[in-house]
Length: 306
Image (cartoon, rainbow, N blue to C red):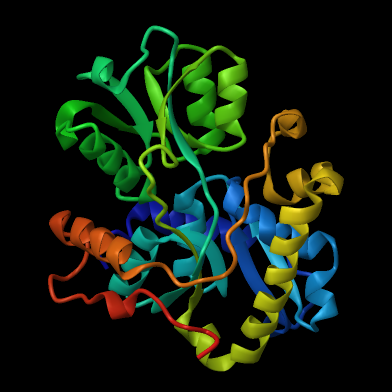
């Protein structure tokens, strides 16, 4: 297991000790990990509006503020599924926590910088706050490549917590950071520079994934989960003006002020990630020596409706 560090083990222990459940029957709920990112909004909406109950699936949502914490919980077997990315799926499989992406999600990440910088080229040898060996690191490489810049053009610094990254750039403690919505819109309102984003480079490696164990043992529950998920997508795309924003904010872990900044995108309906983007992710993982060289893209996704 190449990325299970002492730090990760400590997080696993903390999550285990502090986690709470709604019932002593631990197996009655599909436990879904959520990040404070836009791809969690569909799941939170389905939960808040009772769509999961409508389709007879019990869901427990577990919010996290960093990918490290979420990944540690997944590795410890505390989650059945999570809003993750293709990089995380590859790392989970390498750690023998067999995982499959079951659908793409709608996420949006933006590279922000303090007002001294206006373009990516101006960030040469400047520090960018990211989370190493995660999709954030991966996306940053794709952004650099899109603008014909080398991977080592900037200096990467580990700051796993997304709100902390935003705050560090806002208070001029950092040059730049890769962050998600609604923090990117909040950054713009603070006068920070939006250098580029995943929409500009047309790159979306973000997915909803489940452990293979959950897929094998609870496939009907996951299919019902997706029926509720589809209903939430339709609701958001057609009735976004009446969404109960504050409750969604509380569920996901957005800051309290986020209701003033959330701009809902058109959410994608459930579909498997493309083979092309999966191959790009796999190549990146192999080049970073994070997965075995004989890993195949078939290990990354599963058609839950097959």
